[in-house]
Structures are given as C-alpha cells and as structure tokens.
Image (cartoon, rainbow, N blue to C red; front, side, top):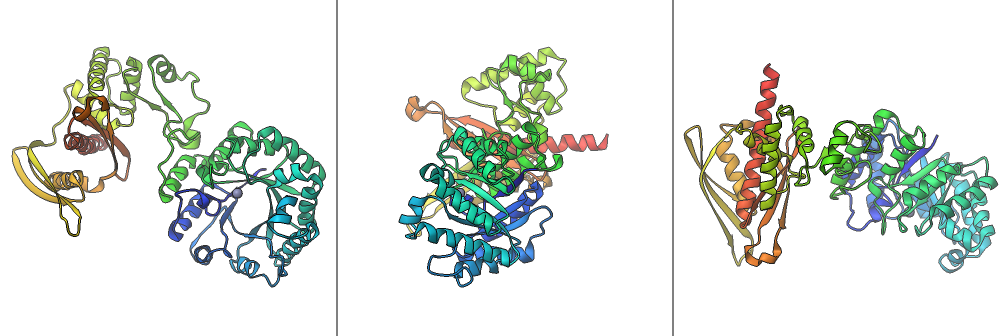
Amino acid sequence: MVKLFDTTLRDGTQGEGISISVDDKLKVAQELDTLGIHYIEGGWPGSNPKDELFFSRARKELKLKNSKLVAFSSTRRKSRTAATDENITKLLAAQTPVICVFGKTWDVHVIHALRATLAENLDIIRDTVSHLKSKKREVIYDAEHFFDGFRGNRDYAISTILAAADAGADNITLCDTNGGCLPGDIKAITREVRQLLPNISLGIHVHNDSGCAVANSLAAVEEGVDLVQGCLNGYGERTGNANLGSVIANLKLKMGFDCVSDAQLQTLTEVSRFIDELANQVPHDSMPYVGNSAFAHKGGVHVSAVAREASYEHIDPSVVGNRRRILISELSGKASVAFKAAEFNLDFSKDSEAVTKILDLVKQKEHKGYQYEGAEGSFVLLVEEALGKRPRFFELEGFRVTVEKESHPGQMVAEATLKISVEGQVRHTVADGSGPVDALDKALRRALKEFYPNLRQMSLMDFKVRVINAQAGTGARVRVFINSKDPKSEWGTVGVSENVIEASWQALVDAVEYKLLKDSRSAVKARS
Ligand SMILES: [Zn+2]
C-alpha cells in the first residue's frame, strides 16, 4: 500500500502566481477527498492567520470521507521547549489528527541557518516529536534537505532521522528540498535508509528542479517508501513539487499499487481541472494523463489506426476520466473527418462523397486562417454546412459598435446596436459592455432570448486573439477563439478576419448557433 499526501494548500501555494482564498482552499480539500488522497496538508497555522482560519473553518465545514487533515510546522525554536513554543502551540490548536513537522538534516544548515550545535538540533527534533506524540497526534517527520545533507555528512543526516524515529514519529519523509536529485541518487540513498530503518514507514517529498520529481517519487517507492508527498498539477515553489496526479496514475496503472480505487481514479481529470480553476491557473494541455492534449491525435494514418482501436495510446483515457480527441487539420485524412463526425453523432460515415466535401471545405477554410483544433463547435457547423443541412436560427440585418474612452474617470465604455430577424420578426436591441465583444454578446442575447430561452444557461468562458500573418502589417488577419459552456458541456468556436470585431462576431455567432443546434438535436432525440 502506498499512501498519498497532498500539499497543494501549503507547498503548492508557494508557487509563483498561485494564491487560494480560504473559501477555495476548503473546496480544494473537498475535491482531494473525492480523489481519495489519504493526507491533505492544509497549511502552517503558526506562520499566518489565513491558515489558522482555514483550520478553524475546516473543523466545522469539511466533510472528509477518505482524507485526514494535516497541519504543518517547523520543529520548535532553539531557545524554547516544545511545550512553550508558540508555533507548536498554534500547531496543536489547529486540532488536526495528523501533524507534519520539518527539521534540519544538513549539518551546514544546522550551524549556519539555525546557529545551533549538531547536538542541539537532535534535541530539538526529539523534544518536538515526543511532545506532539504525547498529544496523541499521528506525526510525519519531514527531513528537510535530506539527500543533500546525506551527501554532505551521511552519519549526521542519519542521526537526525533516528532521533525523530526514537521520539515516536510515525513516518519519516525524506525531502529533496532543492529538487536537484536524479532518480539514481534517490534510489541509492533511499535503499540505504530503508536498510537502516527497516520497520518504520518512509515517505518521499521532492521538488521538480531537474524535471525528475515524478520519476524520483516512483524510484523511492521502488525502494520501499510507502508515502508520497506532492501537489496535484505539480504546483509549488520554483518548478513545482512532484505532480501527484501523475504519481497516482503511474502507481496504480503502471506499478500495480492500489493507492486509490478505480472509481476515484476516474475523477482524476475532473479534479485536476477543477483545482486549476480554483487556483486561477490555465490547465496545461500537455499535462500527462489529464491534459486536454494527452490523448489528442492528428494526422491521417495515425488517426485511422486509432479509429481501428490500434494501440497508439499508452492507456485507455477513460480510466483517468479523460477522453480521446481527434484533431481536424489540413493534415487530416478522411478517417479523421469520419471519426470526428461520429463523435458528434453526425451520421454520414458511409458517405464518402460527403467526407470528401467536408475535407475540401476544411482545407479551404484553413487556408484562410481558420483552425478547428479546439473549435469543435465551429467544426460541427461546418459539417452541417457542407452537407447543406446547417439550420439558420436568425439572420443579421446589421450591427454597430462604438467604443468610448472618457478622460475622467478614464473608463472604456462600449455600446452595441444590433438588428436581427427570426422567422421574419425583426428585433432591434442595444447593450453596453466592458468591451465591444461583450457589448455585442449582450445585444445578441437580448435579441434572441424570447425565441430561445435556453441561451440563458450558456456563458462565455474564454476569449483568445491571435495574429496569423504578422508580416502583412496592418492587413494582418486575426483569429479569435471563444470557449463557451452550459451545464452539460463546453465548446470552442473560431472566427477569422482582418477586423477583430468581425472575427469575434463570427466566433460568437458560431458559439450561439452551436448551442441552439445541440439543444434542438437532443430535444429531437428525447422525443423519439
Ligand atoms: Zn517542499
């Protein structure tokens, strides 16, 4: 059995640009519980009031089924006893069943940073751990800079963890705090420690500075470590901690350790993306197992093989809750188009003439600068168009957008006036917005709402603009991507023009029309 220890809420928030409010910290903890993480480190109550508040609210508000909450701290100060140290008092006041306490391992740090003698540091470790044990806590002892300390002064590094073990620590976690080790180093040193301490639970905590954090964690497990510390999505100081999501999937799927259940593993992708959202991070498409591109395929031959279930994927995406994506591009062969169409239940896979038509249209559009990777909504509409089946939900009679900037208070104001008709009925609307696209979006919805009340459930999530042929100077075209969602799904749409408003309008219209098409199709399905 390997246990999982997530430190997103403590070490993870040391990462650049990551700040999580107390409300969101509580949500993150609840998600980690769903995933089946054994230990959730919530913060360092002695170091800041926000973490103290987290623990007091966690006691009342969190309903953890699988996880135990952990509070974190350093060992006691040199001049105090553990019983009189305020840091340790606050740590115990957090009332968590588990405590993680870190101490110095490297003789150089003891002398220069702690300004203590080597013997004093051993006392500090012993006193802190035994005090926490006397308060009936499960204690995880983090041996800070263990691997560097071991290489600097092997005997002293070992004596620090023996002090923690003798004082009753339930687990000794070896830390590569600088993150520079390679898997070979981790393996060799962990093996020696395992031989010296055969009967105590060992853990591993590594940072990713040499790009090996996941590999290092797995190497330690191979040497008998039974607790892995890390952060979901690999958040953390500098280059981050070991990505716990990758660790979990590898442990379970590649190494046969039952660290989480099959059902919990299936929540991995969703939990990863939800935590990115709470931490205000854009998910990395290329993240192993859970990224949007982790099972994305491009190029004709390969796609036809994937479609025939040949093994071009290292695992079945559904076991981690992800999905296969077939990317449509100029490189695509007929197989990609047919496969993609099948994904959207567009029934023409046997009709090779239709497939050729669609492929031609995709190529023409791509030549103009459109891109359908990540714009599935626009792709579906394009297929409908190629087949002559694209429904028209409204006709545009015209719009005007004005943007004004006042010198005082200096805010931008945009206003859109729009005229459309739906089955001969004309609607004329006006709306303000924070920018021209926002104003257009509001004016369009206002005009359509009485005809299509379901548009109320739809919202725009993301808006991206790329310049596609910068060498043409002012005549450059821009490509606009819009991501939209409703309670059931998310979809992307694309627009291209020399004018950013026009490109945005196309992407906006596709977003709305895709939503209406999707809902009308599922209504037909429900009736039949
Ligand atoms: Zn760390």
